[in-house]
Length: 189
Image 1: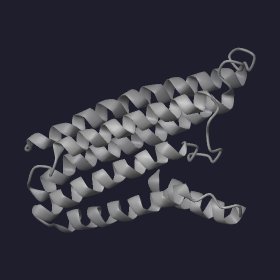
Image 2: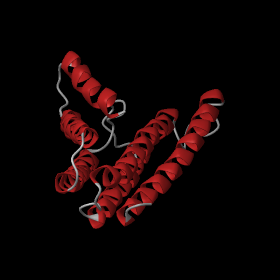
Image 3: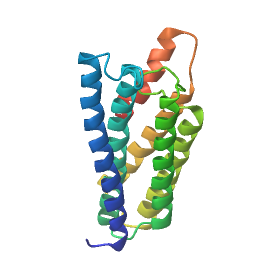
Image 4: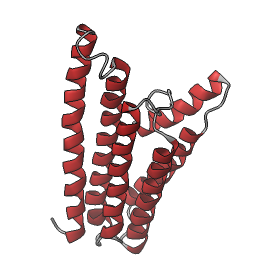
């Protein structure tokens, strides 16, 4: 690695691979429950295992994305990350939020909107993690070499994070709900 701060990407990839393994095992378990519903359906209902499976997919992809950005940005901007500590704090927030979401799903607390089932406090945690990510990446890029790649990446990251705000809106109108859901799911996943 050319820059020491790129090592933070390793932690993100390791957590992402752990979640990938959990996603695969969750998928196998969901398939087992679906085919033989009397096996574990009382302890782990299919809908809960499916939520864990699909949300593990979203989170490991997101962590891989964050890790890739933390690896790429120092190369492109030709400087160390603004703050490695902030990157690790962001990772800790995302891990705690993931564990909290899993715990809430297992006890039946969820929003009922596919891919947006997280409890409100987890959504706020994701928002805080996204803001930390944006601050860290933006200050790294602004202090370093500016290229077309960094400018486009930075603009895309800001727009992407702004679209997460639609996850907090849960209107009574089903058409509006699906539109806001589409903004979040299709632009984050």
